[in-house]
Amino acid sequence: VTGNIFGDILSDEASMLVGSLGMLPSASIGESGPGVFEPCHGSAPDIAGQDKANPLALILSAAMMLKYDLDRPEEADLLERAVESVLDEGLRTADIKQEGDGCKLVGCIEMGKAVADIVSTIDVAVEV
Image (tube, one colour):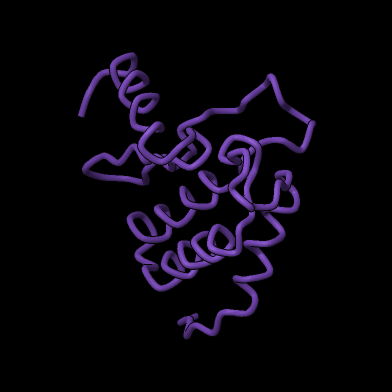
C-alpha cells in the first residue's frame, strides 16, 4: 500500500487508536506465495529479556497468518477470541496498562500463558 518509511509512520500513528504498537499485528501479502506476518512493534531490543513485551500483536499476527495464508479461519478466530478474553479478564502488559483502570499488570510470559490457557479450553472442530 505504501513505501516502508511512510508505512512505519502510519503504523506508529495507528497504534494510538488501540493504545500501543504491542496490540498491532501486521501482514505483508503479495499476489502469490506466502506472506510475512509479524507484530508492528519489531523486536523491542530496549526491553529484551525483561518480561515486559506485549505478546498480543505476535499472537494476532499468527491469527492473520492462519486466516489469510493458511486458510484456517476457525483457528484464527480461536486465537482472536483468546486475546479478547484475556483483555476482558483485565490482564494488561505495561504498554496498555493505565493508572486506576482496575486491571492487573502482567509480563509477557504471564500474558502469553493466559492466552494459551484460554486456547486450550475453547472447543473448536479442527480438520486434520
